[in-house]
Image (cartoon, rainbow over all chains, first blue to last red; front, side):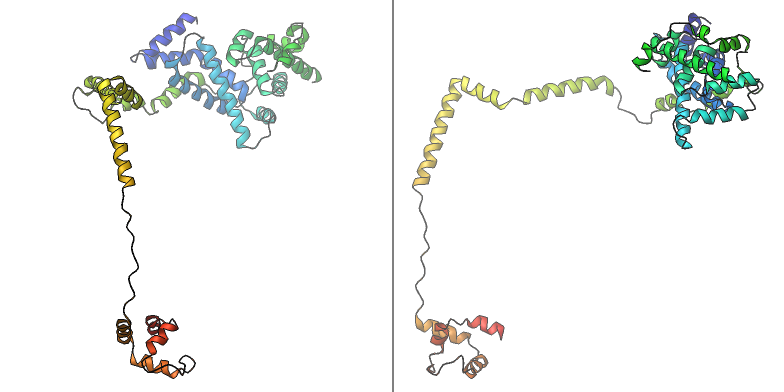
Amino acid sequence: MSDIEDKELLEQFRNPETKSYAFNLLMRKYQQRLYWHIRRIVIDHDDANDIVQNVFIKVWKALVNFREDSQLYTWLYRIATNESISFLNSKKKRFFIPIGDVEHELSGNLSNDHNFNGDQIMMKLQQAVLKLPTQQRIIFNMKYFDGLKYEEIAVILKLTTGALKASYHHAVKKIEKQLGKN
Amino acid sequence: MNKESENILPNEEPEMSAPLLFNLKSKMNSDAGFTTPDGYFHSLPSEVMKKIESLPDFETQAKANPFKTPEGYFDSLPTIIQQRILDQNKNKKPAIAWLTGVFNNPVPKYAVVVVSLFLVIFFSVKYFTRTIKVDYVQEAPPTEQLEAFYLSQLDENVLSEVYAEESIISEDVQENGIENYLLENDIDLILLSENL
C-alpha cells in the first residue's frame, strides 16, 4: 500500500463516523508485518498475540496525535519493537532471569513450540539468531527477514545507519559461523 | 550502539561473507518456520476491536460534566478578570513612587517638613521636662503600734511553747520584752505559726 493510502486511512480515522472502520483497515494492513516482527523477538505465539493486541490498542489511543512527518509503518514498527523489548525486560525481572539469558530461555521455548514447524536447518538458524544480543537480533531480523532498508531501521530504532550496518555485518558473521559449525 | 562499532564496518557485502545464510534465505518461506493458529489473522482485528470497545470512553465521560455554571458565565469572566487586574494595579502604588510624588510637589513637601519639625520639638520638650517620681520609704511606725500589732498576732499556746524552750528564750527576757526579743532575733511570727 502506498503512502497516499496511509493518509486516507488517517483522514478517515480522524472522522468520528469512520474511525472504527479506518482502524479496522489499518489493522488488516499491518497486522501480519507487526505480528511477525514481534514473534521473531519473543518467539512464543501467545506472547506475540498479547503484544500485538497491546500495540494496536496503544495505536488506537495515540494515532490521533500521530504527526505525518514520519511514515506510519515506521511509527508502528517502533511501538511494536518497544513493546517487545519491554516484554522481554519484564520477563527478566519477573522470573529473575540474568541479563543475556533471556535468549537462552527463548531458545528452549523454540524447541518446545508446537507453533514452530521449521525443518532442522530452520531450527538451527533460529537458535543461532537467538544467540545474538537482543538489539543486534532485532536489527538482524528487520534486515534479513523483513527486508527493511538500513535507513528505515535507523528511523525505527533511532540509530545511525553506520552503526546499524556494522551491527548487521557482525550478526551475519556470527550466524554464518554457527551454521558452519553445525 | 557506540561509535567504535561504526569504525569497524566491514568492506564486503554480508551476502558475500555468509553464503550459507543467504542460500538459506532464498529457499525459506516468509514465516521462517513459525506458524500461527488457523484463521488467526482473520480474527485478530475483531479481537482487538472488542478490547478497544471495552476501554473506558473518557471522551464521552468528559462531555457528560455534572457541574453547571451561571448563564453567560464564561462570556463575562474575561472582562471581570481584566477589571480586577486594572483595579489591583491602581491600588498598588509603590511606597517609593508615593514618596517621590510627595517631594516633587511643593505644598506637601513643606507640610511634611513642618510636621516633622513640630514632632521633633514636641517630643524633645516632653522628654527633657518630664517629672521623675520617687517613692520614699515610710517612716517606721511607733513602737507602741508595733507592740500592739505583734501582741494581736501572738497565740497564747505558741507563746507557752516558746517559753518552754530554754535554748531559745534567754534569762534576760523580760515579761513585756518578748516583742523586742523576737524583733532582735529576727523571728517571723507568721512563718513560725505556719510551721507549728
